[in-house]
Length: 377
Image (cartoon, rainbow, N blue to C red):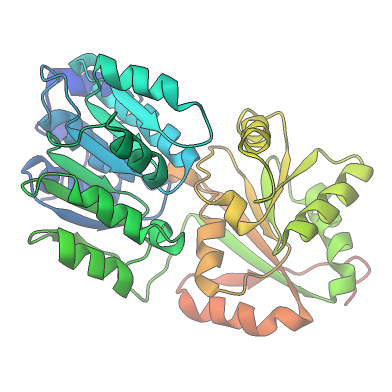
C-alpha cells in the first residue's frame, strides 16, 4: 500500500521536525512513489512538473542519507537557473536544519568570493547551476570527491538550454559509486540518453507520455481577431478576478509594448525578458513574488524556473509555437495543490499551433463565451 503522509515514512526525528515546520502533511504523488526507493539508495527517474513537490521528493531522502558529521560536500543538485538553485537550496536547508546540514546555492551573476569563503568553511550539500559549479571546479574551490548523491533537476530544461557538455563534465568529477537521480517534466530521448549513460538500474516513476493532464488548472481559450486582443485582455483583467498573473508574449518587444500599454492605463505591470540584467530580473521577480506587482508580462525564456506561490492566472497573449511550452507556461499557476486558471487568446493566425496544444492533452480546454460587443471578432 502506498504511503499517504510524511509521518508514515521511516525518517529521523530531526528531519521530521523540519518537515513539520514547513507544514507538510500529506504526500504528493511523486513524493509517495519516489521517497522510499531513494531512501534505499536506488537511482530514480522521476517525471514531474515544477510545483508538484519534487524538491521534497529528492531533498528529504538526501538529508536523511547523508552524514552531517562529515564536513565535506556529500550531496550535489544541478539546476538550470539561478532562481531554481536558490529556491531548492532553501527547501533542502529547511529539511536538514535540525539534523545539522549546511546547504549552499552556487550560481553566476554574483561575486564568487563569498561562495568560495562559505565552501572553505565546509558545506554538506551544494545546489547550483552548471556554469558556476564548473568555475569552482576549475579554480579548485569545490571538491566533489566525497559526493554520494547527485540530483539532476529539471533535466529537460537543462538540455534545452544547451548544458549537456557541462552536466557530463560535472558528472565526470563525481565518484562512480554514487546514487544518481533525475527529475524532469518531460522524458524525451535526449533525457533518456542521459539516464542510460549515468544511472544504474533506475526506478522509473513516469506519467503516461500521452497524458499531459493539469487537472487543477481551469483552462480556457478565446478565438479573436488579433486587433482585438488588447481589448479582450483588458476585459479579462477587470472581470476575471485576476489577483496575480503572468501574461506570456512571444518576443521581448511584445512584452515591453504590452507592459507599456497596460501601465499607461493604470495597471500594475512590468515586463520580464532575457534582455534584462540579472539584477533587473531579480528586482522584478522579487516584486512579483512579494505581491508588490500584480502583472508580470514575460517571455518563455525569462519565466523559466519561476516557482512563485499565489499566481491565480496565466494568460497566453501569444500562443507558443511549440505545443509543450504551453504546459510549462500554465504550470506556473496551481502550485503545490492550489487551483489556477489559464486563458489563451488565440489569434486567427495561431489556430494551427493551438490545435497542436489541444491534441497533446486529455484535459479539456473550454471556449470562453463573451458578449459580442466586447469580444468582437
